[in-house]
Image 1 (cartoon, rainbow, N blue to C red):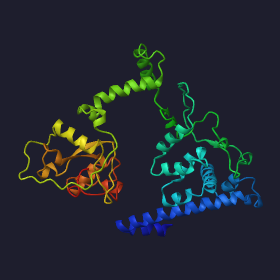
Image 2 (image 1 turned 90 degrees about the vertical axis):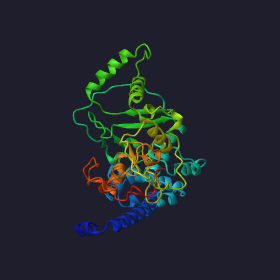
Image 3 (image 1 turned 60 degrees about the vertical axis):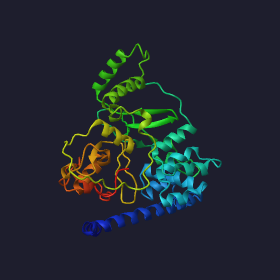
Image 4 (image 1 turned 135 degrees about the vertical axis):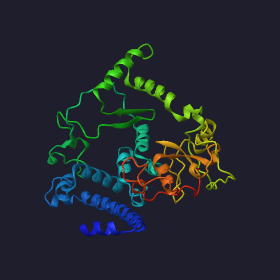
Length: 380
């Protein structure tokens, strides 16, 4: 292991990128092979020949999986054995293990092809929303629960008690919370239907004081005082004041829709003389830039992919202001997220190492394969 660490520390950046891509590709192929083998091994119940009551117990004790990993792999193995067309997608990375687990409860012979096709490229939350549309959960009343001082992880029941299932795997009930403890991953957003989500999170006790007061103020409008109504009112007021899109006077349909990337990067703008009107970017320019970039980071990677992030957006001068770039022309201004704004500044020689990196690792340390430097390519 120390030799591997030493080899990595001496490798060039390009070698590390190639090695990482190779290892990820190999891991995906190995995962597909592992699930295939696990499915057949469990179907034949070979674990019984080795003295184990279930595939779940075999994974825990013989293969040294933890409870969560054992359940995830056994469930995925059941899916791929029943629907082999998932294997090429798993091997290529189009269908991650998490996606298989999300789809598992709703897959049928009739919908499997369409479900696998629709799952390609989707995030976990998007998949959960799609599944919730097929199998919606009933609404649940609001509740507030005081948490214990030290949250802890869920603890499994006796593995021997969980011996049922088509592949001998432990059912979901095999993992139960210990009395007085709460799961570590308590904060979550879970779709329960196409138009509803269930939200849970930990908060300071002081938040309830604010919530109770907001309920009192909103009682005429929302007599039931539901937490969803209170949060909606509070967030609408906040966004009215702070959302750049609203402050620029843009309507919801004018930005934030599906992004259509440009067919080719725009050329670097050329100006005869340096702009001397100041660094300030006028509202009309910001409005035009926001509409053109669709309220997303316009940074492009080397392979042409767009960053597209909506988080921590900043207006960036395409040609740096310090090098004569103008602030009154939308062609010289683009939207970038904070990370890529820092990378652009670093590429232009205007930012010290790590100046714009919140974790202090430096821009290059956080995104070693970042794409087009400032001045090469252009905003979307």
